[in-house]
Image (cartoon, rainbow, N blue to C red; front, side):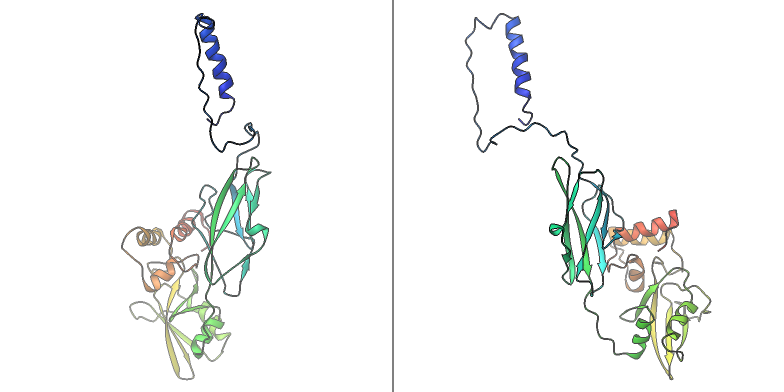
Length: 288
């Protein structure tokens, strides 16, 4: 029994019932009193303080965690560069008087790879809830020796086994041309669609387009991917988030440039958060 006031009420009701029926002085009573082990030394009345131990927001190094929902305690991922070896986890409690405890209020040291970090929220009445956020620290960068790869990486593009990313919706061939020629003015580029037809540099880039970078008579080919353009039509629409949903829930898995384009939040996984980002882009106009 956890309601310590119940025995007093029940005893009073029982006494009244026996008294009304004239049984108080005419009946012998035998009382059985159970004795429990490991009981507390004293009783504690229910707290009048709030039991609310929810968060309304969660941040890693001051940046809001994408897709945070205070009702869900797990499923949050954030990616950071390899150079980031510590992070600060903060949040906002729903009610005043609740407190947040992460790593004894110290910065969290990060190992390379996944770091599952508990975020404890203590309500004013001391009830606890624990959220978890996984911070993924990237592997140490591989030294780039290829001259063409150096150009694209230094241009701010993401290089991944001859796939080129960090390209966004509505970027054109001229967007890439400007970036790479800022690194070397002698570089020239051409872009072809998935059918092998050369595209104007004023055309919007689509996932699966082929980029050829030429310098001093030598060339190298790359495949481009655009965050949110999963099906390769240069747009981000309902068909794209359906492909992500199918990738997660069925055996219709995305591969190559299409899988890279589906990783909208760039955490090296295709998950429900990517689906939500595309859905919000379509319905609310948020930027991918």
